[in-house]
Length: 229
Image (tube, rainbow, N blue to C red; front, side, top):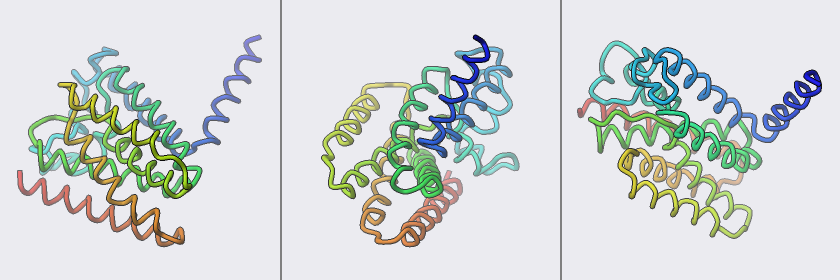
């Protein structure tokens, strides 16, 4: 019986991976980082309370010009989450959105867009709210919401569903006190800015050029923002 359960479990994981390989690997990395922070902090809910990874990776602009993790906090913060609820919500959205986007753009391009969106969100926080420690994949996920709208346009599908998803999440952001407004808006704006040319692009090569330009822009925004703080 146990062997059968192991086989079924493996098959389920394999099926999930095949549907969205990049989203699955990013999710596993997020889970692994959460587990380490929970072990270090000896707390499932207050997992960033006392953890070396959390201290080194959390997005906090005043510490980004030091000799430690420095500017890479713009990426590291994307893998940190405050408690299991925060993480699970982002994981569900990541997989659902990622499955759709990976299917059309491919896993490699999806991964590149995901990090462009996340770094763009970090840049917005650094510029607009630099003294608020920020953690989570939400900025990248908001970018994926914007890209999903473009994907529906590309498919000539009804865009009401992704627009409603964005509207609900923006309303949640505005009503909540413990979420990063600029992280969410920054991700959404970054995703929207790369979505239009991505939809118009005729070849995969052109899409890669667009994403790489986007990557250069958001990295520059992070560096300039750090110098400004």
